[in-house]
Structure formats: structure tokens, C-alpha cells
Image (tube, rainbow, N blue to C red):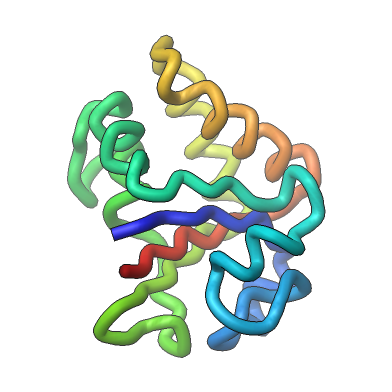
Length: 129
């Protein structure tokens, strides 16, 4: 399972369809190549290492967001993919939690979340095979 995070505006979250807004047609691998800098974080298969560095929590904890939680994006759900969105206010909370983790494997994620918060964006966590 691979994982890509996208920073998206509130209006893009509300309009989210099967394709990731404003970035590219097709799957998130294509979108990674064409997304504006700072609006995408490709974790690939290393997302499990980042999740472990965050504490390996489940849905009950805010730091479990790479694996679970958020609002499902129904049009991104399939046998091989899932998309879950976190609104801008929730992204602020996620950054506050991630900022408390002093672990090198989390630095890129922390920077990505900080950029999303500064842009007043939410995020989509897109996992696919």
C-alpha cells in the first residue's frame, strides 16, 4: 500500500471527486508529477515507517491519521484505493500533534502540514496499491 497526501482548499475538499482537485487527471502517481510544489507529499511505502514514528496509533488517536480517521471521500473508494479528507481546522490540530514528535522520519510530514495550515488548506490522505 502506498500513500500520498494532498493539500487542498476547503472548496476543493467540498468538491472532491475521483480525481484529486487541480492537480492531474488519473491516479495520484500522475498527480505527484504535476502538482505545485508544497501541495503534495509522496510517502510511498514509507508511510508505515512514518506512522510507526508517530506512535503507531489507531483511529482513536489524532496521530493515527495516516492509517485511519478523517472523512471518507466516497468517489475515491475502491478495492485498491481509499481517500480520506481532513478539514483545515482538523489539519491545524494534526500539525499541533505532529509538532510534538521529535523524530527525523516525521520532518517532511511536519513541514507539509505546516505549509497546508499556512495556506488554510485541509488534506487528503490517499492510499492505493
